[in-house]
Length: 355
Ligand code: AMP
Picture 1 (cartoon, helix red, strand yellow):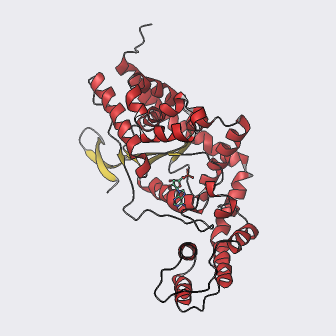
Picture 2 (cartoon, rainbow, N blue to C red):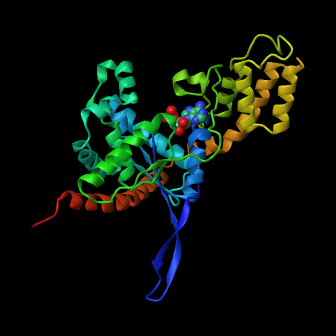
């Protein structure tokens, strides 16, 4: 999908010029604290590419996180950390608009407008809401129920056209289109676009964890993850503790590589040269593999790969001026876009000043 078409604008009274028109991408980042290798390959790398190809709005979804009632100290700490990490990993405030959701109270206003035309039945029917009722029956709050109207406000506040989401968010994105279209119909305007899901046409990356299970995830514990801020010492320790199997090599000729070993090979594939990966794959099949050596190799290559990232994260975390400047810049850019939309929305609804 091409991100750029062209937009004809007046250069002067005689000529038009073609300016590149970049589609608007909007995406939220959960403020869950330290980012790991899976977040980097599964999300951040794409954001870095998008900021060059689209008019990109990336926000830290701190309003959204209130549904789980974080303490003020935890909320503050994790928002600041994730903001600093995204910058350290390559999001460039000059290329994209990186901001805190709560810096745009316009979000809350648009959310309220959408809530006025969102119906209990359609919100209750969503799979994600039903899952939440099951997983946290003691905290089924209105914020959870109205998650899709807040998401619609996030996206449509910038008239977002593309949203990089996975399959699990498709139903929510459909609701965003529903709320935007409902607004358009109610006021007889063609105002909000219909945002579409966006993915680069590559296989979705799934980075495995170190504990032998599925994908790397914070909920699988400290030793499943390699954080982008981990030091060499921590990386070596985690990888040397990674789950393997008891037999060095196939138990039967032609048998599949067991999941924990396949996971290590996939991690190698991300940070080692292809000949190193091929060497260990062959060594597994001919039975000459030593898992200790394989892990040492992975640990050393992982340290080399991670060093620039962990250094930049440490630097960003200790540089309050850098982070504050970027957050201010993001807030200003995002507010400029949001102000225009919210002003027009107010007028469409009928909030026109008569005094
Ligand atoms: P989360 O930390 O679960 O909020 O995920 C943030 C982003 O990172 C989402 O786009 C996920 O799809 C992506 N992500 C998280 N874990 C992995 C993983 N192990 N492999 C690939 N992508 C991941």
